[in-house]
Image 1 (cartoon, rainbow, N blue to C red):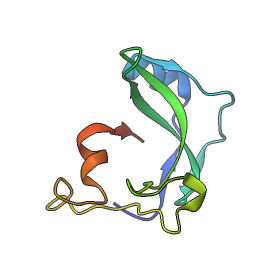
Image 2: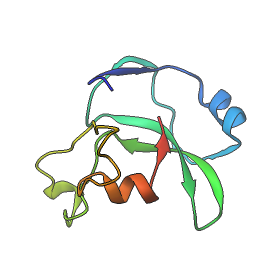
Image 3: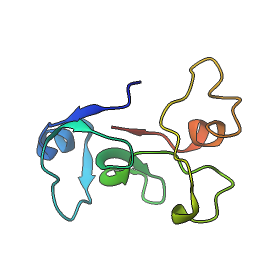
Image 4: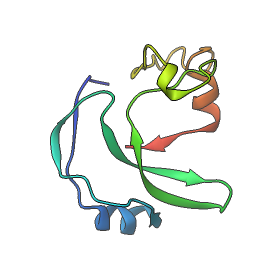
Length: 101
């Protein structure tokens, strides 16, 4: 994955495509140069209610050993497909907390 990407599809289309509930308070403007640590719109699974949701998230992984999001010094954005499942950094999220960007 690159260090930048674009996100310009309308939220209404994502809601229809993925059958998601829209939990965003406001729609971010389309961006053709989204950088790490930016707020992005993601489709995720709300396991508590067993449904897909469209929600704002921050691009970057919070390591399993970090106590608080503000304490994270580094937020990794890339994982190698060969080692992601066994990685201490990415493994737990890979198995349990995926989303679509």
